[in-house]
Length: 575
Image (cartoon, rainbow, N blue to C red):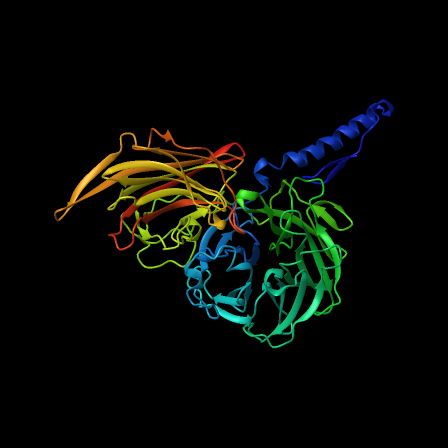
């Protein structure tokens, strides 16, 4: 039996030698009608996973009217809690961040996140819309569970509040019940609490800002089957309470569903999504969301190493009160799709992906950019004149490598293969000050421009196992070919402005090649190829920085005129 998954049409094999001519004519009419149905769908009616090839881990999605909003983990990156918008669950754009910085109630010391705290900070948020307000809950594994809210998702968000203090409480999700009561499910981090793989539920007050009930154990994944249970999302449908949660770990896990008629259980459990025969490893941790016509979908991540956790969208069907995710269901468990018919949202919408390239032509920092810690004064200033100015920051006294440097301005890898080109104008006032274009992770590499005794050099540096304080190594250095120097006077002090383009080309195995140019046309390769590596709970990132070699020297600066990204997706170049 052959099954066409696009329309689930079943075509039964036929023994033509036993058919008379009337049966053959009838059969041809039937086949023609079936293929007419199939041909009524164009290629544009289908989507291909992943829908977002970028690191938006632990996604949660809601629908408000005809609009979909998504947030994701941001860990130590600032601004935090990205907000993305879509009209069709396929095409997404960054519209805001809910956290300007990580200076929050309960964080001690107050400047804890001024220095990069890799892998800490904002874990697995949940976004909800209730009584005209957007609310996001998330767990900080070191300080507790927080909530932030707003009435305008495109505007300012209120200062976050700490609603449940304590180490190890992570991955919260609220449920606003039909009777006005509010509940919260959350998981536990073994690295802090010394226990994990359990889910607990407690009651909150009417506006969801304070815990008013005891924490009750509702599921224990230490059953020899569903280890590493975390990231639960709370729903209610047709009289059942549902908790959808990942199990089995990030790289090779699966998705389970719990259901009960009572908020505190006992809960039944089924596995509703697993890799199966697909190539999508660890399909789990995400969000159920419906469309206005009553269809259901599931957004989840897939771990892709250096690229981070990229996003897939799966169809959902309800069977006997269970959310079966994907296709090829066996015992209520589906497997991921690669190509599938788009959600029916009433109309087609233009292709859109989260922002990457930047012309720096508006007086605010683009939403695609994040720092590795709370930004400080004089790190960077956007302008309305078509550039972003970054000032040199001083190395800390205990400097070993860039792992602990917060003023790296970075964005996510955005495609399996891409080329990022930065046009920069650098003023290096002191010997050994440098401006660089970097690929950052647990291993990192960068190409930089520095000045020694009045002469310029382009250099490549590489660092492996940066978290272990491994010193970076200089791989290559050369005087730049045809470098353009614009010399001006600041009163009687000469100011040399060097114009340079840096480029990093990434292939579909996350292998990076660095080059530079003095005119933006002819690029000269420099140094060794570099294998990008993920950071701590985040994918590799790309961007730039400027550092002053010695403290108490006049700050050098660099003007970023353009950062262009060309992506290669399914054989098509996108800009």
